[in-house]
Image 1 (cartoon, rainbow, N blue to C red):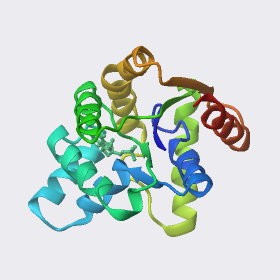
Image 2: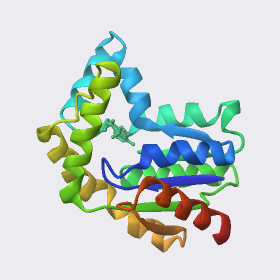
Image 3: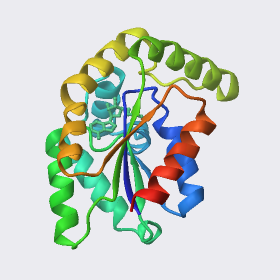
Image 4: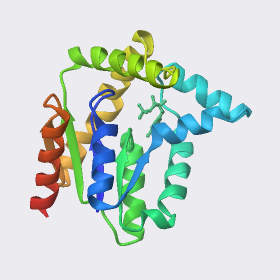
Length: 195
Ligand code: AMP
């Protein structure tokens, strides 16, 4: 099972991806988590990635592609994966499809979590507060300034992927404003019934 979750920051992709992992025994591939790990390294590249992320901008495609390719070639991806935060640009999407094609594989589902942008800021600020309470850590990009850039970047560079996957007839859409359990139930129904 190979799934892409699409939606702006704060749409609930990470939460839903984790639930799909337990339902299907697939890999949760979050490029955001991978980049946060890379940014933690005390190297020039780590510092560069950290700054890019803190500004709410996108990490260059070649770095992302290399990280994704390396990860999906590992044994725990053999039953498939749910992609959370990738692809985020048209060129990432096309490169990834080409890559799967080389292995005679293809994506099964691209699922869009639709949300109202007005409420995203609230959601992200709640997440920042919860993380702060739980671990003392707050994402450097969970603040008003970076969020504005992240949303603009999503609308300009990632939202066009919705049409791209629609043209490939694998796009499904869910109301991401429903309670998380209802979103999961819809997600499982869509995935279970549509192929
Ligand atoms: P996320 O946790 O998915 O919101 O990602 C956090 C940040 O990591 C993004 O704002 C980007 O700076 C970087 N990032 C994650 N995934 C990608 C990607 N597919 N392409 C470029 N940058 C990414």
